[in-house]
Length: 378
Image 1 (cartoon, rainbow, N blue to C red):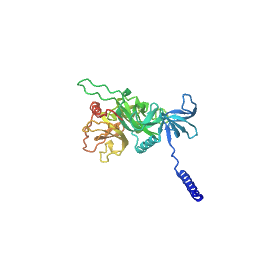
Image 2 (image 1 turned 135 degrees about the vertical axis):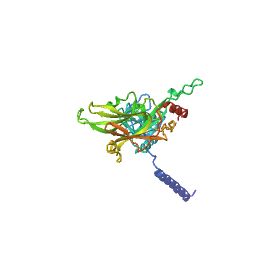
Image 3 (image 1 turned 90 degrees about the vertical axis):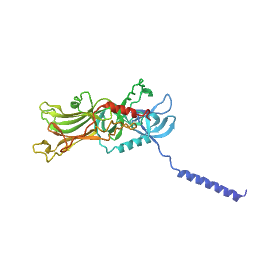
């Protein structure tokens, strides 16, 4: 081999090394990956062994950068520089967090239909259902804005099939459970209905008569100088109630107005509409009155008013969607009432005949929902 030929090959080999080195420098750096803590509180450990040392504490919602993966564990680093291993069951991925953010944006402008408070520590889920992804954890006493209700079959213990009916008997409807899409601060998600209570003062809750309060709204306020405290203005409430049975296809079956008796300094029922199939939301506003009404009539003046919707008689049974669990009736009757002093009057146009309403008979709707419920939810 001549020297020039050897030199040319050496130069070519050097050029290849230079090219490869350049490509290495131009190759994009792998994108950082993160997980987020779902546990209320847990710790990182220095090794995957039966005996290990704690290297840091982490809390629900905390963002952790992934350094390494091994089996069902991640080695992570916190924003404080603490490193350690954490079980994959105690975290969720960025994709799940992004879906929670999308859920929050989707309902960001939708007003709450009621307010509530967390009864016990509970997780927020991405969708209604116990086997759906969960992330945020709410603490007992946190305030809630209720957005939408869903009702789904309650999982059987251990996934056992429901009991089979006897020969000639119709199948029993499956046990159901209610879920609420809620907003708490900057967090949104679905939670079990039984883990929260509607925010209602004790002075009104005492009149529930064994029913569950599902909504409570201030209609107006009246002054009573003889009550205790510096604030002498007493709220007048519109209160919605329902039975404690889960899985009903309507939100409430009774509406009551509690006015204040200045002489006895207590609440009294001024209006009651019951045995209805009502659907949230309720609108509270001021009714302008009817200028053309007789002068002696109280409805010539503006007055506090409220509007709610009930199922029309010709709608048929409302069946919650078997996947989302949300009920969407097609025919509703709108009912508006004015509060004139302590008297509640329905607002109707001259000659208007109110449409017929469905009664709150749950049997037919429950049976229809049972027929449409999927045998197995994914």
